[in-house]
Length: 279
Image 1 (cartoon, rainbow, N blue to C red):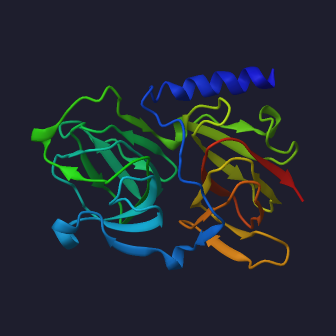
Image 2 (tube, rainbow, N blue to C red; image 1 turned 90 degrees about the vertical axis):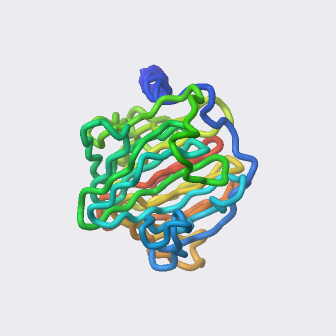
């Protein structure tokens, strides 16, 4: 029954994507940490200066043709002109309320914990509806550019907006790679769970969780969406306090020792399996 549930949910979430969803990531991850206090910030669209949202680097370089993960901060009342992007991006709301849709669509405010996907070439606006607004964006290729709607095109993908209340969560009893009786939950976002293919999931850790995540693939990247955790690569290693929106990457076969004081949700992008065990 467990495999049937996993397969069904994986198929359900694959409806959000199509063949253009990336299947591999040639850039291997390494053991690294970026705490929320050490994020390097600049402007998402330098040509617009402070009229643009701020952008914070987590991994990769969004100005080059490579995978990258970065944060975006929007001021209260921000609303972009209609525009397109040259590449597809996927986003998770970390703070506030965000709207991403056709310029004539009614506002669909996505709260923290929600997910959306914006296809390359699709005309849209982005707006922010709270005092503080932040999102994490994931791209497979770059550079990330903002272009006029006159250059719009159809790449075959469809836009997606998933309110946090519409996410499908599985508990530890339904997941083979999560320790039983751990009260851990996961929600599939995009990609394939076929062997060694790129995928992204949300992992919800309960308050008081203490365990380990072992990366079994060439690529593992994790972003704290809400809450916070303590993380270290070995018992004698540096202990990192990773509050939202911190990031850590892990090389293949590396183990991260983690613990939480409060419920914590992390976004995990991996090029294969990982194992979550209790301590």
